[in-house]
Length: 107
Image 1 (cartoon, rainbow, N blue to C red):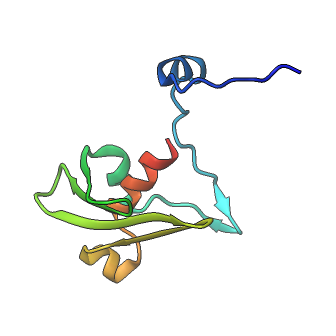
Image 2 (cartoon, helix red, strand yellow):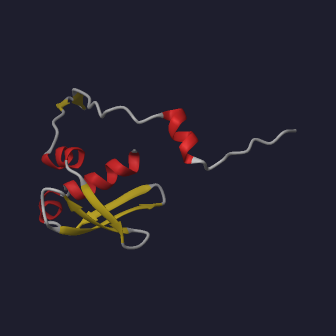
């Protein structure tokens, strides 16, 4: 019986798969019209600096702001846990800092 081997050469994988397609949101989700929030828009249009602090925390700053924010972004078993120190997250439960990490994670 032969055994398949996998190589971690990401350059080969990148060439084979290519870049992911642009995000194309659905028109509706559960009967509600889809809209881009400011957080999603910023995460996709602004550049960001992301530095790991440890296995679960990141320091994120967006190019349009001089503020840096500590973001918890970690898988807890099969559940993604995210939290940010910014006021947007405090008031809305979502922010461009979390959106940026999510966008990088799925890409």
